[in-house]
Amino acid sequence: MLLVAVVFYSAKKFVGERQARLLKKVDYAQAGCEALIRQKEKITLEKMALERQAKEIFILYEMTKEITKKASEQEAFEAFKEKLKENVTYRTCRFIGVSSDELKEFENSKSHFIFLLKSKKERLGYLVLEGLSERDVEKVSILGNQFALALRRVKLYEEIEELAITDSLTGVHTRRYLLRRLEEELKRSESRDIDLSVLMADVDHFKNFNDRYGHLVGDQILRFIGELIRENIREIDIVGRYGGEEFCVILPDTDRDGANFAAERIRSAIEKTPVKAYDITLHVTISIGVSVFPGDGKNLEEVIDKADWALYRAKKKGRNCVCSFGVY
Image (cartoon, rainbow, N blue to C red; front, side, top):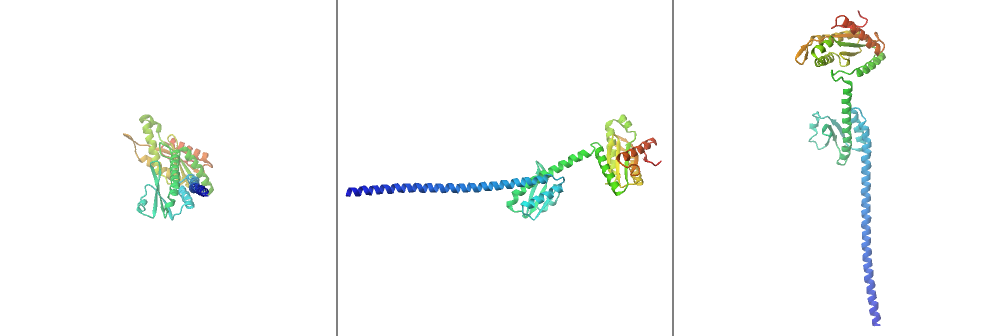
């Protein structure tokens, strides 16, 4: 009996120890499983947060495409503010140019967030937002950078457009732009039943200046003529280089008397002002022909043709004078 009791006790002790070890392993496994579950949940939450953030950034990026399509700074800024309202909470938002002194009043303000708009190393301006929360700063940065791209695009477009419509030598408009504007002004004059006048001006004896003093002096004369014409016309008038030494001026809402007066003012100013071309001083004159819509012509070709005829008469009369078509 004693032997049986000893065997039974030993077996029970062995089973107990075995069971304890197994239970301990189960506890370890369960703890490891719970840790894995917690880690999985954490990874899932982080993944969801990243997906949400990526989706938000993508949506913001897609939205900013609308900003970059605008043709002017003001349009781009208005589009930017609309997109900003949809994603960011703020009280006021303003755009301040680089050359403005307005920024100084916000530099030390704790209630205003200032975002520098730049393209590479060039400063384009500043965004100043009042009442912006810290959590929205990144969104403003994303939209702000897209707005900066839009500003740069607008600036480049304006520079290219300016080059396309401006004669590089004289600084007045190109012939192509001039004719397009003349077509527009003719339609406007016809719809409003008002006169429009055209001046065709040509530098007298220009070939002689070129032959005697060289083309550099001739170029200086053309710059001088273009500058003086611009100085002696109204803001609404349009001047362009028609070709060679010939200039054309469009005078909206101007009858024959007004056109003759404007032409004489230009002619007189050029006659009285000496041209300083490098080391020489020259006296230059021009001849001007005048035509009036609709009296002298019903379309662009006729109006220009009649002004050319009047210019030809001014040359035949001895130059340095003004002639109006149909007036002898």
